Length: 297
Image (tube, rainbow, N blue to C red; front, side, top):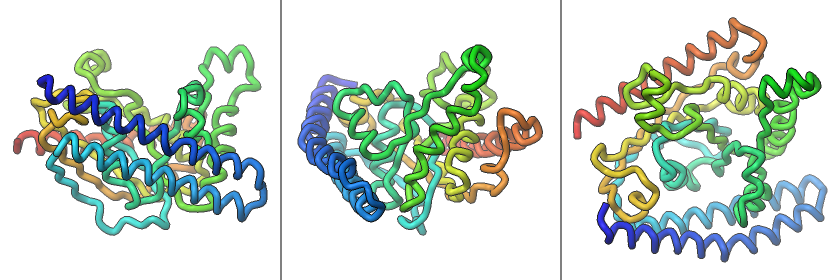
């Protein structure tokens, strides 16, 4: 990545920051209204206003990135999507740019994309309050050691997240979960001894947790595969600055099996094995897809 790419990337990042600082106060105003007007109709109407503001923010960001990066896009599998459906979205995870790619292909094509976030992220300046106002679910996972010391914590994380997701029943929502749980690096791949060439091992427990927390609302899976040029750097500035000349995105629409949101992943070994097999099969297909696309480049 040359200096010109870095300069363009920094300018794009500055534009995104300014866009955030301009629109966040507008969003905060409607968040305050929603705190004051507690009846259901107002809650639903104001939630839709908040989503409109967030989608506008993403749309402006997409324009900024298009001007700075000039990427040639190849996107397939986005036909027949419905903004009146609920979606679980997953994707291979290689870069901080992945989130911007997902927002670029999904904005106003499917219901607004929401991420499960760690509880600590609510403290992020400016954005933490915006995520909270947009009803992003904040998760607090307890370790086995913490549960052993305090058995009353068992199941508390799922119960808390399920309550956070109750608002999603009012109107369609897309929920994003990176099954790998972390960004791909060769070091992590080698440490895991991953059986896949281009992917880390998926954390099936996280997917089961998400489906369980949503109490059966998520029946459609959008399995997104992002393929960056093999020679290009994977940093956020590389994406924003145009060091990536082209990006391919393949979206596979699937139906979430009914049984996948009904079992107890932690306590039922048979369900856990079945769920892991299902996710493993998805990952085998994704790995083969990436391999075939990279071989064509």
